[in-house]
Image (cartoon, rainbow, N blue to C red; front, top):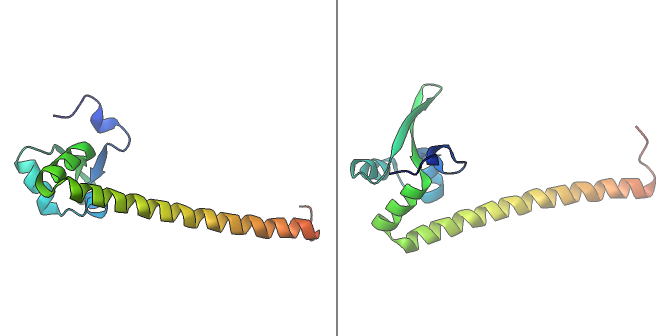
Length: 113
């Protein structure tokens, strides 16, 4: 069973769509966990489209049990790498913008606004 307040903690829950993106599990895998009593869920709907909301910790435990710890570590590493690459891209874009701004200021072409 879930700890007190776990459903309200930031990052502790995820939708089945997010579970598919982050962990590569399908709807059937999640339903299997729910029926086995390993996953607690809450039903939700956005714009009339139903979805399942599950606890991240329980899902990770179920994945470890069913698919193995190696699979979970591989997926989490891949997800972290993608997040790092995305952040690097954002920072590179920001650095380029700042370099352009710096060049304008140094050349004296920047007009006071």
